[in-house]
Length: 467
Image (cartoon, rainbow, N blue to C red):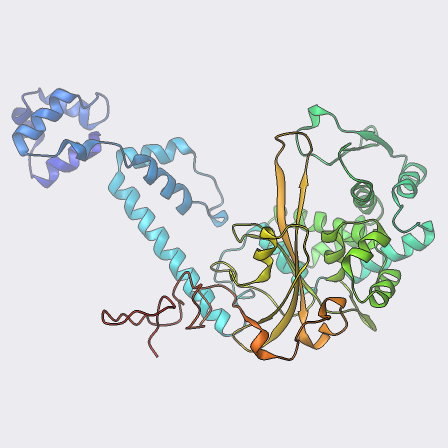
């Protein structure tokens, strides 16, 4: 409040003594108020109102919480290199609100400039590769896998060799993996307890050579966690070599990449490349039948299908996404050049979002992008829970898509009018970068167009743009 009072005095061009006299308080008392050493009491506020006609709401703090939230959002940038404590944000919002609002405004302008730059890069077909937006470690790792077309040849071949060496019974791998961990590495299995924290699925104690797994895991999930630990024990060299090739800006991103590579090995071990591809082709990529054969879930099968890009033995080039109800994409991997925008949201007309309203159903959609390219999409909602009444449940929609050129190889193309443009759903990469003018679902005007504001005309589709 002291800074606000000082600003009022400076705006009125008053000295401290003149303001103290007008308020009927001593100079030392006013000085202490302005330096936040004494509170601004109700009697002093009433004298301010009487002497200057000031609205006492000027000194209220009802907007302080909103300003703190806006400051926190403006500073939520990993490129800053440090986290600002809430106490510091509160001090800035309370003591210097004008400066805080100016800082928030500058942050908003910077964000808009970044979005515009990324949108223009998207028009050139390179919104992902452009460095307009600051990258987080998660984004750097995603870009690393994207650059490799989601296929890691050394790890994939090593996983297939290990699977052949172990004679792994497909779909029943947990016992074989447990024996290899114990016989080769002296690692025994145990169960996690409450001290390990909620939601933890795997914890390895190198000192006691114990791998503890959550008792809530399904057999396929237990096998995957054991295979991940096996990757760290037997494939650390290839994992480090692959991670060293990535253009990571910090050690956090590099560590995340190592975890991603270990998970890749685990998936490739449980679903070895050659037998998996052969069965996928035989079953016409039926995800449910593949999951039944290999003892894994819908998401795991879809993820593996997006990696089948071994030279001279390629499967259908899929792109794989996992989204939540709010449109956040937590996984996005592609064996081709397909990708959604990093700016804005994704398209509400995309059938991946319909999956939330139709749980248990596998949905299909022929979708066309603004550039005319068309794709066949398969989508389904998946969920998992730690179990028990009231326990939180994770719900995501899984999307698996491919170019129409390959769609006839999929069982999901049965009864779908692949070659009828009138049956296609017109989607985009996100409202801010999509230039479809007649879309009634548009949430934002396109950043790359000028709005056409006409008071005499109303149209069904919002945000008309100038031609």
